[in-house]
Length: 131
Image (tube, rainbow, N blue to C red; front, side):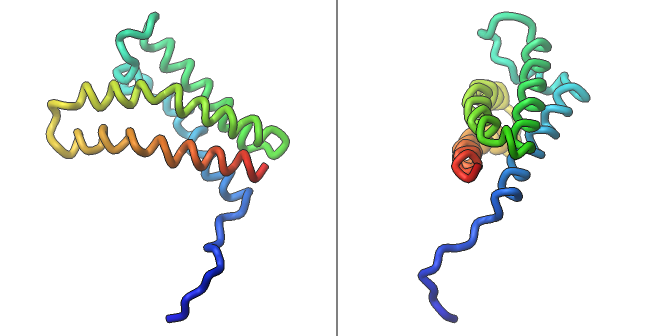
């Protein structure tokens, strides 16, 4: 087996952007198609109705996903994706807290979402840099 000092090839900029845009678009649609599960993730200390925040975050995901998908707005969209991922982090914390008494596989899912924000943010920053 040969050893190489060459860097591992990253996906193309287009593919990398698609890997950011399409999940955002899919989740944005899901916020409208099945809003009830998202309502439960809205922290109770956030003012207003949970459904409002579910729809607002769905609109944000659709807007950011669209901006990332379009090359002309990709840099702005990737920057917005970083902000979006940071903005929804409290919902992930709320989910981990609310699911603390569920069976351990569900707890693992809820806790596992927390560190996943880091690679999502770094991926968005990479897409931004490549745009």
